[in-house]
Amino acid sequence: MSASSRILLVTPNRLVGIGLKKLLLEYFSPLDVSIVADLGDVPELRSFDVAFLPSDSYAFYRDRFAAISTTPVILTEGAGVSESREVPLTVNVTGTESEIVEQVQRGLSAHRPGRGHGKAEHLSAREVGVLRLVARGYLNKQIADKLSISLHTVISHRKNITRKLGIKTVSGLTIYALLNGLVSSKDVG
Image 1 (cartoon, rainbow, N blue to C red):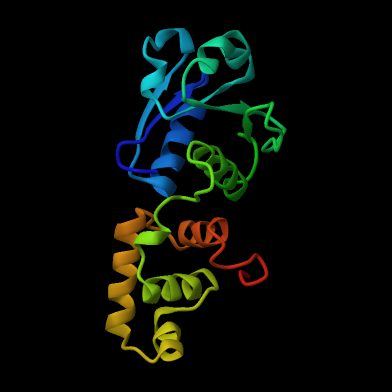
Image 2 (cartoon, rainbow, N blue to C red; image 1 turned 180 degrees about the vertical axis):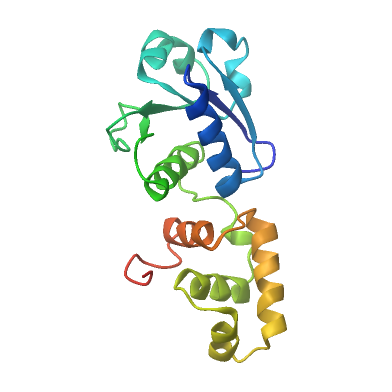
C-alpha cells in the first residue's frame, strides 16, 4: 500500500479497533488508519481505499460499496478469508497474529489486484537475498558468511529493507516474504 492509502476500521468494539490499527501500522506502514464505531458516521466512504467492518454493517450499507471503489473486508469471529468473488474478503479477529496478518494482507492486496504488498519492486536484488535469509532464520553473521559480504553490509541492507517496507520485526519480515512468494512455508522454521 502506498503512503496515501487510507484504511477505515468500523467496529463497535474499541479494543478490536485499537488492536487492528496497531497490527496494520506495525506490519503494513505507512498507512492512514481511522477507527469509527458505525459506518453511518462516515460521510465520505469513497475517500478510503479499504474498509474493515462487521458483516451486519456491510449488509446494511452494501449499496454504498457497490457504487464506489472502496474494498470491503468483513471482520468475523470464526471464518477465515473468503475466496469467493461474490462474498467480500473476511478476517477472523479471533485467529493467531500470523493468521490475522495474512488475512489482512489479502484484504489490502484486493484493493490492487495482482500485487502483493506493493513494495517488493523497490528492493534491490541483494536486499531481496538478505530478506530471504532473514525469513529463513539466519542471523546477521550467518547471512554475511553465506553471501560473502561484511557484517556491516548486512546490517546496512537490513536497515534499508526495514525503511523501504516499513516492517520492523523479523516476524513481520518473514510474513512479508511468505506473502510475496520470496520464501515458501517449508523454508521458514
